[in-house]
Length: 289
Ligand code: FE2
Image (tube, rainbow, N blue to C red; front, top):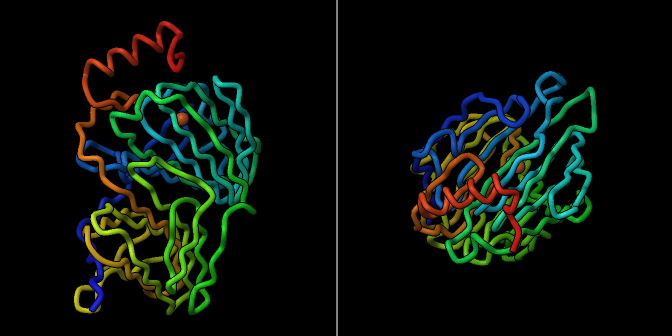
């Protein structure tokens, strides 16, 4: 019999703002106790009011982790200190490995209409924190879409998603140690999804439309919209649309089990490394070899 992962813990999101003053909901990362190794933070932004997003994310630094932006609706432009620029549009993603450092901005390219998406931070292991930064744009048409039984749909942004005995690889490649899986799933009312995950990988769900029924038949729990649902460490993920259609993110990755010291946009293993990051940023040498 296949083991199904029960829902182990719920991290509700709170409204906050970041960047130049963008309104968003933060679940993972709202405080230190709300991380799920190696996931440091999940921000969801969704608004039709330009006041909530127009300030964007002006230039700011990062060191020591990966930052993934996935857009559902809207248009932002990315620019960074390595000379990259890219247009981030609905259905597309941007995968940035900050490594030893990068300074970037993400600014809206629209003055009206809906802006909706997510930013996820995934930690890097000590051995990779000072790797050169890299950046990749992923357009919507590069992301494979899998038709699920019952009329559902899964978009595989990163990692290996297994469904019906078939493995589909997303276009993004995350860290070699964490091997993150990032899937955006839509289920109509009455539909369900079961998928194996590597044992030991940390996994969570984030419904952003509708509600999810999570876990084995004899231990099903309801996960509300805009709550991060942390799964147990062993077995398959099994979910179903609860009383109507549902859309959610499925994320999984291998934990690092290393000390985490965070100071704003710098995430390292020790206080000394944080002091170094701040000093390098002040000196204008963040990211330089
Ligand atoms: Fe950023």
